[in-house]
Each structure stands twice: as C-alpha cells, then as structure tokens.
Image (cartoon, rainbow, N blue to C red; front, side, top):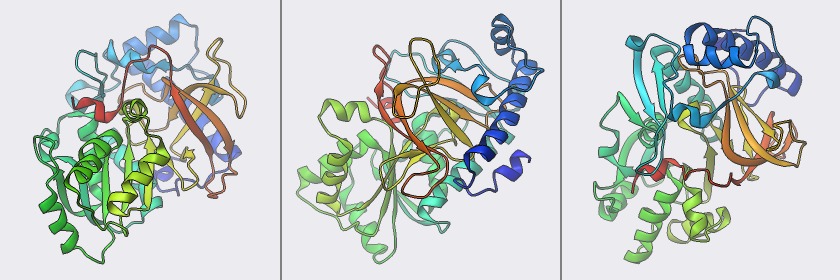
Length: 356
C-alpha cells in the first residue's frame, strides 16, 4: 500500500495487526530514506549502530528527542525545494524548531489533517470563526506553529472571520453580526486553548454579553499549561464556554509542529486517538522500555508523513498513559490515551505560547 492509498483510508479503520504491519514497513523505509538524505540523522543512526538496510519492527525504530530540532538543521530534501518552513511554538528567548516542508510533504500533511478532522465534523465546509488575529497568517512561507494551525484548519471554513484584532481584543460587534448572518447554520470555531480562554471567554465575561453558539463545533489545542496555572481543568474550560455561548461540541487535539498533520483528536469520551497516519508509544523514563497499558511514561509519537525531514519517530517532553487499543467506547480503532503533563524542567510549549 502506498502513502497515497493510505491517505484515502478512514482515519480510524485499521485494527492493531493491520496497523502494525503498515508501520513496520513504512517506518523502516522512512528511516532508510532519511539515512540517505540527512547527514545529521545518518550520523546519529550510525553512532548507535542502527542498521537501516534491515526491516525493523516499528517499536525498534530509534527516536529523536523533539528538542533536537531546536539545535540542528534536520532536512532530508533539497533546501531549494522547500515550500514552507514551520517554526515551533515557544516563549520569547527559547530556541524554536525549524521544520522544512517540500511540496509533497506539505500536501500530505494537509490531506491527513483533512481526513482526521472531517471524521469528527463532516466533509461540508461551514462558516468559520477563528479566535485569533488575521495578521498572524500573513506570511505563508515562514510559518509559526500558531499560524500553521490557523491556516491548516481554515480549509474547513466556507466563510471566515477573525474574532480578534491586532491588539488581541475581541470584536464583539463583528462577531455578533457574523453569528446573526449565519443563524440556523452550523458554525465551525477554531482557536488555541489559552487564547480562547484569555481573549474570548474573559472578554465576554467582562462585556456581560452572551452568544448563541449552541449549534457550533469548536476544535482547540495547545496552551493547557497556562490554564493549569489558573486552576482551569478541561471540564472547567467546557463549562465556562457553555456559560457564555452555549457551545456543547468541543474537541481538543494533541499535536506539534514537528509532526504537523498527524494530530491526535480527542473523542467525546475525553480520550486522544491515534489515526492510521500516526501512532504513539509510552516509554518508561528510566530505561525507555515500553510501558504497560495504564502506566505513565514519556510519549513517543510516530508518523508516516515526514519525508522532507526526519520527524517520523520523536520522543516528546510530554507524559501520558496508554488507555487501550481498538476498544474505546467511541468505537474508533487504534490506540487511545490521555496526557498527564510535561516532564520536569521541560520548557513551556503550546501554540498559544507564541503570543506574549
């Protein structure tokens, strides 16, 4: 099966044995490709004695620490063929990852994102409210993680409006007019978690106004660390939004610039799900062995998509617990898990953190 054929699959349609066979083949091939085309990757693999000429089980593919992209230029394509350069999120003063995408890689990431999100919100484009400012997305070549999120999810909008001005102030009048214009239609809302709370929810509370978004669907991600500091849980977040705009359909997602497109959507039961395009492994922090179901460890993320850069097997700074595989109550196949926090001393990250 080719990647083109895989990208046409329903995103949660493969059982464990089918998916393992797929990942064993593809990740071995990607490792060989990056070994041939990325000098730093080749040096790392050679230094640890990993033989890319052999086929390996996907759990045996060496991972790169995600922070390595902050200190090294990791690219597996001709730089002249790069059409986009993504920079990871992070607060001022932090190094940022640079992810180089050629036309094929950028296209495949968009296709994967479309397949995953459409399985949650449907294939029909909807009027879209973006909880961000339009100025964030002006540069389409060198793109921040925050801008990449806005641009990526904008493909689901038929008509788009940015709810915030350049000063990050909520334009309530424009927002009310947009909602009235599309009364009776489902509306799609996208934003980053902390920004929604800080610049949408709090602004509505301050104004004393409430909106009717009962028929809308919201997808959000990133910035949970800042909300935890304000003692706002995921349940609190949903309840507070319901208070000001009556929105019920709220979906979180887990993702990163280093594997854009391979997002892990949260189902209606609160579990994050790996699609057929990506997978996770939970590793014990002391020896990096594979943790059991229900055991907390470090999250390793796998993806079939990264070909222009060696991002197919990455060790994150996030902690999580594998809850099961193929048996979630939402009936989606694949692994499902929860995130429990970040490793101690790991830097604060999240797409909304790029705005200070």
